[in-house]
Image (cartoon, rainbow, N blue to C red):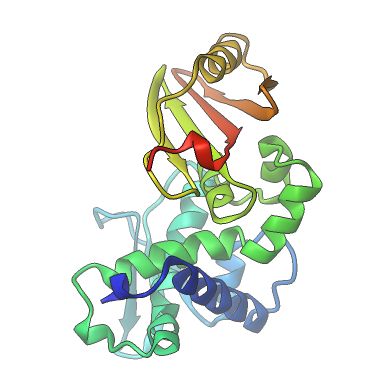
Length: 242
């Protein structure tokens, strides 16, 4: 059912709902604390390590909104899990905005809406576009400002903004994710991108280089036993195969 709507219409609707939720909770600037957001919306968060998933949205006693949260050592995962369930709580607003009966949507539509709302609650589009442009999309600077969001979420949210870019995520030396906000098929990383990635991977330091007039930025997200690097490549229409 959601496939019949244009991407721009869906994105605008999700942004509208997310900003409404934040405004109702009195959140005016990042970082967005998902736990405080839940409290302001009168949603209880209770630890429950018996469940298999990270979190679950329920109504205890048939009416009290509650998020059952499994413990996790990573704060960004906890904030994402709570934000996702807040997205579940607010998903009905998106369906109402689109004039869609949620009972008539395809299986998983509510989950998709909750996922997108979670990203917009932790990294709201209007704030993020201005902040990203202001710091020239420096991932580490944005991470310091949007502290409750993971590096990966912040990088992926760049795809919801302009200018056109390609975001690449490398895990343990392999491309885990590569996508553009331009339509069409994204080509494999160029030799210049791979050189930038290798430099970041080996030195554990950010790097910026150029391929013609296109800037390529790379950042390390390294921890013990695991190496992740994120690249942001400026893109043009001719970079994408149609």
